[in-house]
Amino acid sequence: MVILEYSKVFTKKICLILLNQPLDKDYLHILWGKGTYFTHQYRSFLDHSPVVLLFCFSNGHSWRKVANETENTSLLKACADGAANHLHTITAGDRDSFLPDYISGDFDSITAEVKAFYADKGCRLIETADQDLTDFTKCLAIMLKEIQEEQLKVDAIVTLGGLAGRFDQTMASVETLHHALSMTQLPVLIIQGTSLVCLLRPQGSHSLEVNTGLEGEWCSLIPVGGPCKTVTTGLKWNLNNQVLQFGKLVSTSNTFEPVAPGDPRKPVTVTTDQPLLWSMGIRKNGDDTE
Amino acid sequence: MDEELTPLDCLLPSGTQKICLILLNQPLDKDYLHILWGKALLKACADGAANHLHTITAGDRDSFLPDYISGDFDSITAEVKAFYADKGCRLIETADQDLTDFTKCLAIMLKEIQEEQLKVDAIVTLGGLAGRFDQTMASVETLHHALSMTQLPVLIIQGTSLVCLLRPQGSHSLEVNTGLEGEWCSLIPVGGPCKTVTTGLKWNLNNQVLQFGKLVSTSNTFEPVAPGDPRKPVTVTTDQPLLWSMGIRKNGDDTE
Image 1 (tube, rainbow over the protein chains, first blue to last red):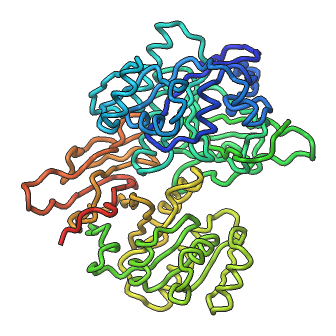
Image 2 (cartoon, rainbow over the protein chains, first blue to last red; image 1 turned 60 degrees about the horizontal axis):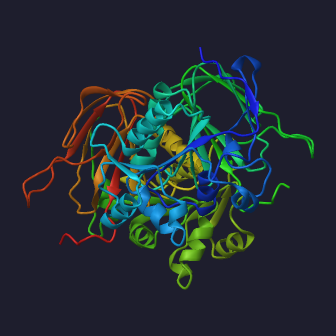
Image 3 (cartoon, rainbow over the protein chains, first blue to last red; image 1 turned 120 degrees about the horizontal axis):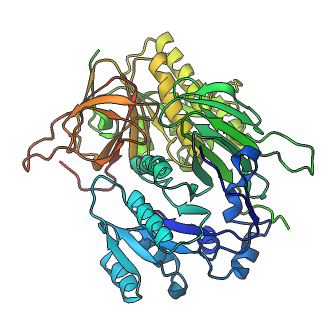
């Protein structure tokens, strides 16, 4: 059984993986400098307490304010192969503030110029030639190893990219999340555009806090990989021991249980007997929640 | 029941497939639109797709009038709705909350194909693979529903990806020599484990089980052949619905 550590603290640490997709500048700035400005409540699953998935972005702060105030405290940052090209492009003018700890992959996407740039700056280049695993899976494996070797206290791995572009690579990202279940107990989140994706383990129950103010209007439970007997609360359309399965029932365009104006949303709770993909919308350029 | 399919025939100007076209609520690729529209026996927009159609056909809108626009009409703008209504396009409101606009649009199309006794080889859908992640997955769910709605192949195309769900009966033979094929292909067991046999791929499956968490075939490619030789067909047999996906060459070399 999975027991999540109890900790109610006001600083949480993430590690960041960038995949080979165009980067969102706001997301990058916040996640890169992350560490100090959000709360995260993780309690034992026995208490059915909230897990704040969008904790990595904000604690009720506006985007701009967080970006201006954060120090460079994100624990580890890595690029999977061609992600380095996107990082190099989007950080023009301030590249020294955005040097990854390592770049890994089979290096068939990173350009020679970008590779040389980061090598000169002292970033490690870790070539991983294994053809059976994707760059993402290999990058994650290295990160988990470093977390363990350096005995870092990490609460989640956040990934930027992986949900757009080639369809097979989007599916490969989902496959990496499945592998991650046996590689680590840490949540592994993927964010791109206005979507967040996270694979829920089949043990215990999950309680998702959805009151950061950054939640979009939609959420979804997708049984990628096989049928999931599911129970939920906190959704507009809840599941009551129903089986989610492609061809029968997939919960898309769901949303949160309505509450009285001014009231916080209730947590979304999910129990499943097989790994179940949670996906939700991220509000972009929305109102500040100060 | 064996199937022979050339997935990218629909994008080939010299292609022979008779198709019907569904547009989903995503930015439209102009090249794809022009080729597919010219071939399609029926053309429909699912709700907000009409907004994109209206935008991208500015200056020549009369040449791109859909047969119908269906959906719950929560995405189409009032202006666009009025424009197409004035032009005589049917507006079919489908309020069913349990089915997506795509599924409902497909149902209407299949009904019209049957009523008009049209000879159709495939339904081609533009959009559905980008944007909100849940809606991409909903498109895949529609493909699953389609298996029981029709025997016709239902293809989804957006960007440089094509997606098509292979039925568990019989074997599938996919012709991949149009010259429009990209470099990658993929077999994705989205709904559950699939015992799979393939030929014609670089990494074939020999009665192996594809399953998330164990084995998913992504970044696969076609079996290499001698220069100048045509590729062999890709054949696939599966015991459960299995998602085939492949790359589309864009702005590449002509193969004439």
